[in-house]
Image (cartoon, rainbow, N blue to C red; front, side, top):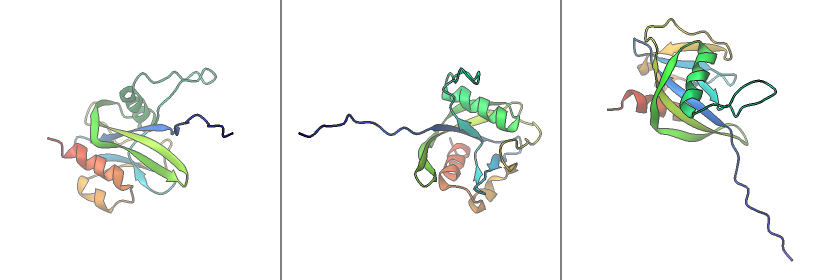
Length: 149
């Protein structure tokens, strides 16, 4: 007799990312420990009683919180980016669902951010993006947001 196991869907963390431009049209990126440039953001919070962290109310509020925590920049999520959701493999066997938002910088002339959880944060003109060591999905999200109609 064969016993069937109930289907268990894969469970991946969800990471919310932001495409943020400063007043001069430069995009904010952070260098991670893999020596890649990436969009600012982080994981959705499910809430944890032991740490006192409350659950995020929405992906939009999560991306706004993550950008503020990681860079000191106050942003407002304007909208989900077309082609801005994908599965990213950060290491063999480690997959993350990435959800990317275009965000407005509040106010748009804030000073450059500081890197707290990354090696470095910097602002890049759009014409420098093709040459950066960055996953192509991040590049597509940047171009989708900056070239929207």
